Image 1 (tube, rainbow, N blue to C red):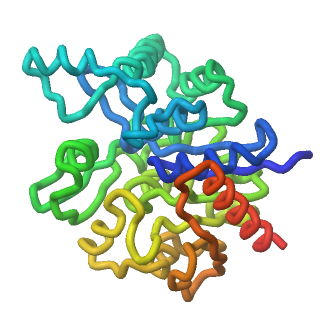
Image 2 (cartoon, rainbow, N blue to C red):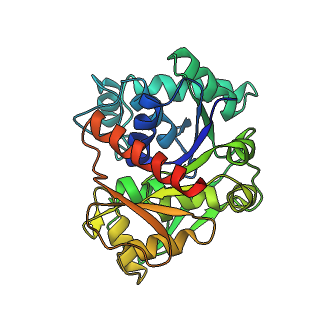
Length: 308
């Protein structure tokens, strides 16, 4: 039986690691389990930012200039919306709208998010399994010094400027893992955690009891890629968030946050190693396709070393 691999992911950094894995692993041997705590409805349309980022990245459609959205995007819809006085803090590109409209139509027809994403991946000939963490409603909220904010209001509209006090995941405790999620974790030869924001992009998955239990119980080695490079985050609010929570911005903190189910941490260059976890080093910056492949190979090698 051929080897199988699973990666927990969210955000742009996570999509880059999945892309690196996808480029080197045999077709249909990889499962990506994606954060949906960021999902929300905007003007009635169901938006799944982390899933769509992954779809665009793997299909070669991601916008290389903006770092999010579709390449070659146009903005006629947003211009028309703004001219009518509509809120324009969250951009919906003309091409991007196709995913949201089709997703909304399918959800209204009784389809699950799992089946919808599978159809999108098949339409773009993607030879891997992409699973939402759940088909149930889970919403990330951020408690800040300006009050409780829905995730997208905090992340996009306010650009993470309010001081973060805590994060909560409404609906997570009652949510079931999407079909195939627990099986993928339990039957993989290695489980990887992408260099996504641990508190905002990975914790929503961990807040679902059956997913956390599977990570504890899986016989596979579990390896995370640290989101820290040189004591800060490459992109996004990870370092800012850690400081606001009173946490040291170190790989020790990352390893301790994930806890006993983590077998090893892949860290950048000569960054400080975590005292309480096995580790390996590589250049974890992923500017190019070759960089992504390099990090993917290093993560797989670390996992193989753990299993050995």
